[in-house]
Length: 322
Image (cartoon, rainbow, N blue to C red; front, side, top):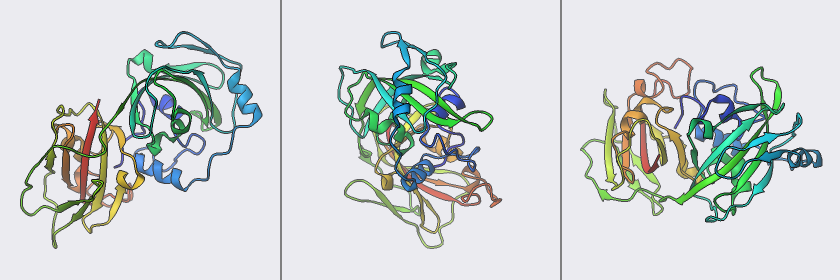
């Protein structure tokens, strides 16, 4: 499910500082980035090299002033690292982090010269993600098994505004972690006639059968298949969801189920059919979306996206919302 902009909460530089592909940059996706695209790229990429002794020494030399629970001040000489390099500053005393948990964090970012870029504390906007989501792979290995409350330094090679190699340093503090459901749960809803038929596997993964000659309607269809008992989702929230998307010929083009972890994203950063179709649903619900091309990636196949001009079908399990 493609986003309109890159993931993040406090601006492009902060988002890039925690991006999985900090060194690579995705020159093809300034206007449309996607958790699934990032995941596919990461799956195909070679394993990250281990930090060198110089990388480790550079991160060990970062001074952290300030107590957990508030934004710290980082002090260091100008530094660079060759690969993402981490250091646990404080070990928390909360629950142990495990894959599939929704993790909430605060973080502050500094550039390679030691200048502060900004923070989620300043914006009062902690960020949440699913531990194990490929979009946040940079955080998975160093945080797995750590307790809530842990503070982690991450130095990540990336590119600056002039597209020159640089390094961004973050201090991340895990403030909360909760186990979210693995699939939609609630009351089954009888769908309207004539829509694609959805069948669920034992694990909840959906498949669809699209009727012969089916044509997408002129307007968005958001058919609830399972009605959850959670809060109603609003258009300004960030949701955690499992989903699969198909073109009308029945071809899967994107699936969090295939990646093995749900994804989190703001409803302000997704295609219009998602914003309109998920808003008003309740957490725990499963929704069938039939999205006309103009509410997806544009009605004309103009080369702006491989999905431009395509009417799309999604099945979305809404697992959580912030």
